[in-house]
Length: 259
Image (cartoon, rainbow, N blue to C red; front, side):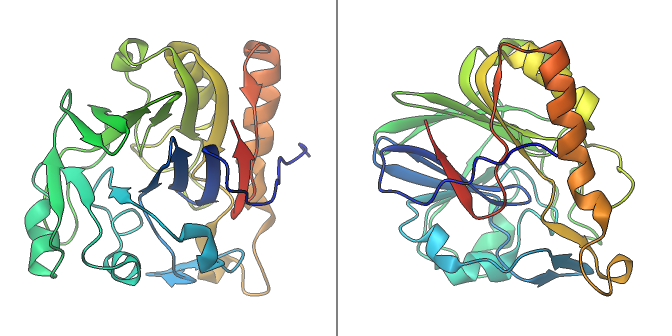
């Protein structure tokens, strides 16, 4: 089992907090950006492994949404953060949010860049299902590069794509290494593919995400099934062999690391 970099929260200017699943708090140069916030104990048929302490997400300046699936764009979680909070979403997703009363929604597409406070945000390619089923909105998924005194790549949900070679090098890559169940569905990277993504993006530091947070409720009636940690163990082992010069910091949901 890998060691976990479970540092307590601080007031540092450069910090990454793995909230869980695809939700990450990027605290960079005085700007706090939250990715794909899913903050509930239960969502659809999924149950959270460990209860979230909402203090982790205090003081967020803006939210980045990679795509429209229910486990990435969760309306009740966004409502908990407030309808006035700025949201950045893939082009085609704003109407869904504005109809629910969110007032500060900005759409972007691949290659577009915007400023949020003292940092810049650039939309990057991702390959994943576009639809919010059933019969919901449709928008092309995105990743994001946040750039300031450090650069942080958030991949969102995506398959391994050639365009990743054009994204880096970056200081930090937040790479999804699994899904939420025993089997990996389409449009996701497994540990081996995530290692190849790291090779292409060329980060100095990788924080694996999209693991160890949710599981199907029927598969763990007495607690989280053992397989929830298996992807990160596999990922760390592969990185040690294939990219030994890259720093890998494994965070449990709710813990942080200082850059």
